[in-house]
Image (spheres, rainbow, N blue to C red):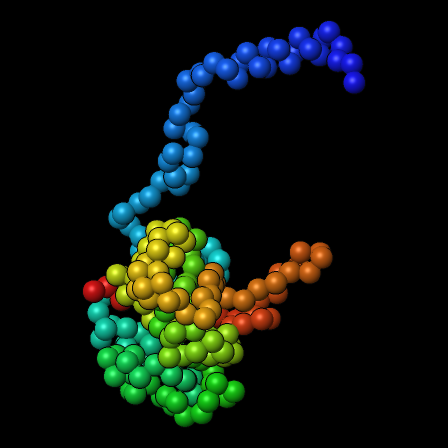
Amino acid sequence: MKVSPAKENILKRVRNALSQSVQLPFPNSEGNNSVFVKEHEGLEMKFAEEFARLQGKFVFCTSKAELLENLQALAATREWTDIICQTPALIKDLQLNQLPGLNKGDMHTAQAAITDCEMLVARTGTMVLSAAQSSGRALPVYTPVHLVIAYTHQLVFDLKDAIARLKEKYQGDLPSSIHFASGPSRTADIEKTLVVGIHGPKEVYVFLVDE
């Protein structure tokens, strides 16, 4: 195939340019730094803002006693008489047996479920759940209301921080499934009509305990 003089001239200039190294004009924009500025402080506020933006409900508790009071007040307001929690450590540590109707039934009848979580991702308002938790895979999505108990040491900034911490925690032997949930379940049809609670809980609360 015969190359025209004009095209050959262009290719020659490209070859000459490639043979000479040129300093990048904006070295910091070539992937050396994170796109997102990592904030080491104020993770609680960042998570609360993003979680609320996704229709989640956030409650900050200064102690375990205040957490129990908030749970009791919520249960009384909503008139819950059937609450399920399959995490023995939570029941013992937080004295959840003081809640009305705790473990009265099962996940098929419960009005709300209480679980722990692996961690919270502040930048996206995301809860990280896994199959390694005693609540299992079904409980967090089966009941109409999901109540998540978390502690301030479980806050991380970004998803990559969460994954790194999971690898460290499980020493490379990760749980069979890891779930990233951001607010209640929701979906939209072709006309962009948003429907909440189709594939999971209609309401999600995160109670964050300050240690």
